[in-house]
Image (cartoon, rainbow, N blue to C red):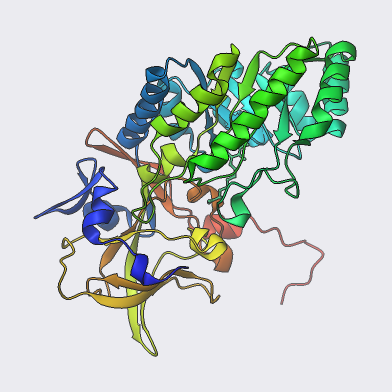
Length: 441
Ligand code: LLP
């Protein structure tokens, strides 16, 4: 975690989160819904996701590409937010899905996404998952290795089907993001090495009957805030397309992956218009169908995690202990990531602020949401929101320390609904099976 000196002011934090504002009476509002009553009614910790923000951002992203004259295939990266209600909101906006498991594929289909709008990525697809995908006749499978190619070809031939595939290229580019979420360097486990592609492409198009190889896919990393790695990565793909075509091979589709970052910390994050511009300039003239797989940019700002202060502990530091833990939102513990924190009741003023560590109740030193964060004074019982929790939040949560999964609430046009019930302790314990042959005390 970087120093508090670079923390945004509350003013900046709100300016970079236009779906949030303070009402003098109701406190923090998200898309017109007051958050404190939700926390009071449904309890804490609870996730709140705004369908309005999801729709708005989906629309903004599509508008940015349209403005560049690009007609894209939009595939939401389900790994960021897999709730069927969210997927169905995005399906209504014209999005398909990027899935990385049979489970995500089933979720996307169940939520109403069209099979032909689904792409399947990931380095460890099992035979069962691939068979399911082929039988569902999905839009495209992104192939991550030569072994996988052979396996997919064989499975499709056995099923007497032909499946559309693309080669995921490892372009050996540093995405300039956190090392745990960069994916396009040679030492990362993803994709097929750039220089192996031409020979493999030729062999596949000429010899493999189970696959229809349509083009290339690339995903460089996540939470990317710089333009240069996107540009460099796509330029390398464009070069490859030219090489393949010069060799008489057909390339009709390019999947540009995801990765567009957001302003967690008041950063000047690049808008989708910049991504669209880079794609238009590097790949737009190639006469191919273009696809993108955004996750975080669409979903993160649509969600918050509501929590209550359990206790304030005065020690070497002032610790504000909340009832959400790293089992709920693991990003700070896992990537040292910074999430905005706002109190639900009073709008933060510039006076009476204090430096605190906001921590969860888990018995691990890494269960920290914020170190030395300047916040208005918080006391037992106060409610807070952790911002930008709509992506890589619920999906990465666990029941560590026997803490049940939190509830998830969707808001839309002033309506609210629980979309995932809070798990009860009985439900959590019911997953355990104690063998009958084990003597009970
Ligand atoms: N496509 C592929 C093949 C991916 O691997 C990913 C993310 C995406 C698309 C979506 O990327 P996005 O637009 O969301 O950046 N758990 C980490 C993020 C891991 C991202 C993994 N791949 C986090 O919480 O920051």
